[in-house]
Length: 257
Image (tube, rainbow, N blue to C red; front, side, top):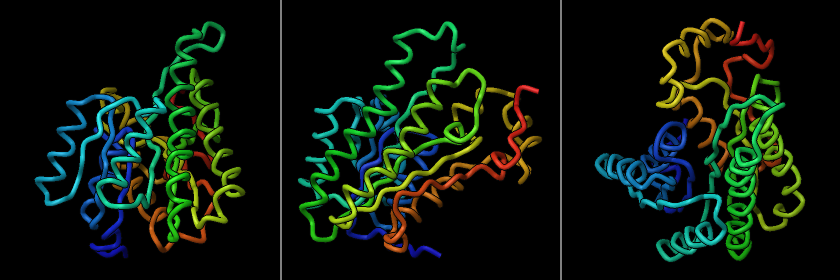
């Protein structure tokens, strides 16, 4: 079991964390001693999430802005180093999902998905790694993929493509980052109960029916896996993707049937 001080004296950036999985990851990291830079493109969400964590006694800083913008990414890395002297963990969690039929999928939707899901993750990893390689202790990177990187899902061709690309990025970066004691992995969540998914009144019932473990994940289920992969206990794990889906991808029943 991870101790309450497992991330003491560590500085962490988490993107796309104003709510849902990202927020839960930040909350758990702060509760275990980390200084967390919490990013969301929505300033109101970012500030509210940070206040909640501070009220619980955590050390958290709001970083509202576009996590796909290279200049903004660098400013977050600079702030982390200015705040604590180093950057220990980066979790590239921000992503957007734009459903659409492949035959008519619009160009602007594709480029929005690419900008955030791929560009944001790639350049955040780049900026973080350039800082981490100057540190004798290295660091840890984690990307948020999806089960749609492993199994086809209706109207998610663009999204699934980007998530599969993130898993290949993590594998490729093993070559680049291992000499600097930086490990890099991905998590691939399946159906998860968040503010967004619960907008669908049928979501929990449908995914409970087709998930072998009997229910969608809770955000804490995903956060627990994320914290393990960026902890000191996982430093020899790199280039891997951990699927967290209650067994769904083993049999892959469609939610549309």
